[in-house]
Amino acid sequence: AASTMEGAARLLLESKISPEILKQNVCSPGGSTIKGVEALEQNGLYSACEDAVIKAYKRNVELGK
Image (cartoon, rainbow, N blue to C red; front, side, top):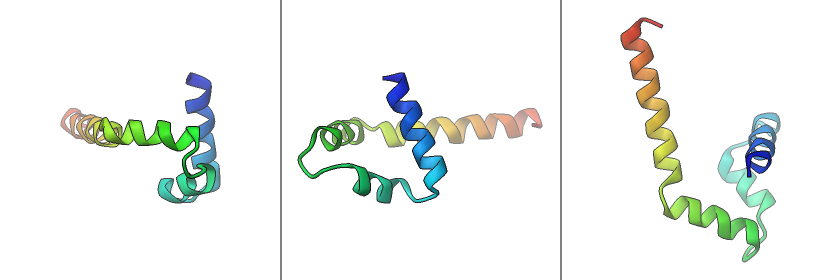
């Protein structure tokens, strides 16, 4: 699982395209990857990650970093 996440992150960073376009490019309709991505989206992964980054940023601002 960690290697999968690492590979996906590397591909996103190196391709310099939006996550949505990357998802469209790598997921076959009805395939196993899109089913996994859909489960992550339905369970709020995007919102949780966004919230974590925003809160960490705000705390760094408070700490003067």
